[in-house]
Image (cartoon, rainbow, N blue to C red; front, side):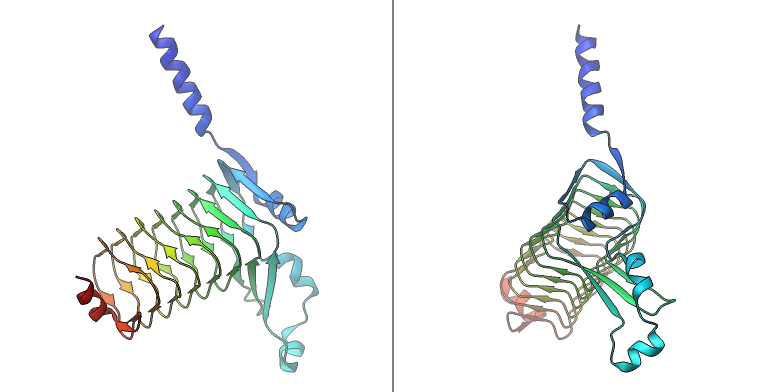
Length: 256
């Protein structure tokens, strides 16, 4: 009887953690149709191009006769649907930023509703350069195993990067956080760049492990600056950094 109970428990556990497969093209179709996206415990196959570059390209003017007349080479796609992925694995690129070399255009996706990538794994690129996040955003517990960028991204509401893993260099250069953001308990295995980043309502690096360099040059923080138990493996570049109007070194000395 004991063996039967143990086997049943193992079966239930295995069933509970098995992941279904979802095609990126199906997700993109639903977003295009304005549907709310809620996907849990799934493997996402295919490139998730949230800029919809392939849809936009055919109707765009050639740059030779467009940009010379004051046109822009940036094409922005506003995603109105709320997007939620929990415990999902992305096997291919997730793109909210695509610089298209052949046409010269740059494609960007902005998010008007809630965005959640919680306890997910990005096995390939995760590109969110220049993206605007208008509502609450959650990347907590997520693993970035390839290149990732949030350079120039703007976060208007609550945002969490707690318990995240960045396996490759991670950049938040010029990012703008308008609400408090937490990176608590996260690990950056390679260089982490927060150069020119603005934290307008505080930030937590509590118990964060920066295993290589940390670049916070020109970074500006207003509000809470929690660096308790923060570890940096190599160098910290804090030139011109301002923490509530004070230099990084003076703020750290005062906090001790």
